[in-house]
Image (cartoon, rainbow, N blue to C red; front, top):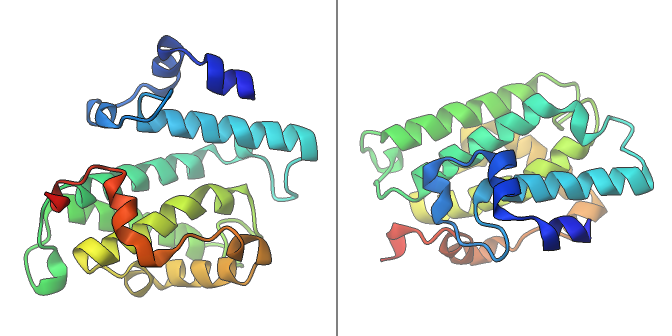
Length: 193
């Protein structure tokens, strides 16, 4: 795994990620675009699964469609968050970016509603691990900058957070929602200018 992080060249990352143009403005040390984070995260999970075995609910390689859903939600979040718009929370007409994010969030909620648990699969899984840092950032930053409450908008997402917060392992790594401005400064949001 360390060799992936140290020796991953730009051509290899570009070939793997096929990044959209708008993602290339992200300046991440040694990793040139946001899609590369997906690559590194997935490789870390694969290495952990090799060492400790996958969770009983399956490995990262078994959940490609849910991984794709997470990427679509992430992209929609970035587009809405980084575009100045008042948002529909104050009675304004929703922007195209807000509409897209709400549609992707509804797809996530539909997946959560389709399982017998409050998790993405029948029980806690690698999918919950993958979604957790991004859903945390979305929850905090959209509430802070757009006045949008994901838990209220999609109760299934609220139930997912409640289920995750019942886990000691999650509470030990949970983000600090009182520092929303730091989440968005990572994205160099035009809202801060």
